[in-house]
Image (cartoon, rainbow, N blue to C red):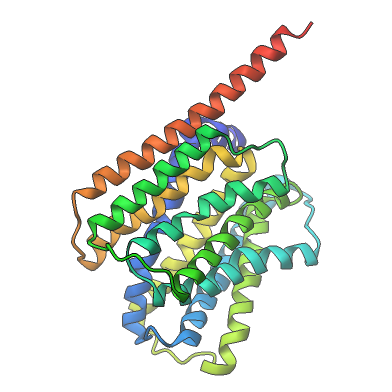
Length: 320
């Protein structure tokens, strides 16, 4: 099966989305383990940005290397988007998204943090209208989104996070989710002009370098006591970023944004499960309720897209 056919096939969408969101969901507990190993405190923003800069620069290098070794030979000559457009994508999808995320996570905990991270899906569905007027936010899609939010709220409740507040941390996470949603759609648009792995790798490497540029003058280039364990944490985070964004940007390239955005709600759900396994945090039975709600939302949205395609097909067949 060709790559395009796989990423358009329902099974391919489900499997690829599950792998991407599972990888992203594993990021938070591994980041916490890395912070503990490197003695990075919550208030030390510059060191957090430096760690993120290491992660995304390395992730971008891995993707560019993979593309050069395996994909470039198949595609032959390739086009590349202009440096200005690459810089815009790197600024939004990597630099601004994670600049705000790493600080916001230091000041926000609980159910509201999970809901805000999940709002990337909403911003993705709203921002696609800037690039593709054919994609509409229908009642079925809104219903699916509401079920998705209810699902991640259930995951937060199950963890005992019942606090409701909105401060700087939540505002930063909301900004990160907005940049993440817009960046995903922008990457989808730019992937029409450049192979996905090359595009994703180059923008991540550039975004990672931007993070290093703002953090190195404060922290120095290598302030951490790196050993084999901490390097494995860093390498895994880079690998999951490369694989996760590579997969997700490919899914986005071949499908309607409204159809696949709902899968992003799996990120906080997987995050809760993996935090329990990796960090020993308590796991509640509410996670089953959370998964049921998220899956229901995905089914509703996909049925909405399928019904729209069926109507379009009937209209085409009835056209004289």
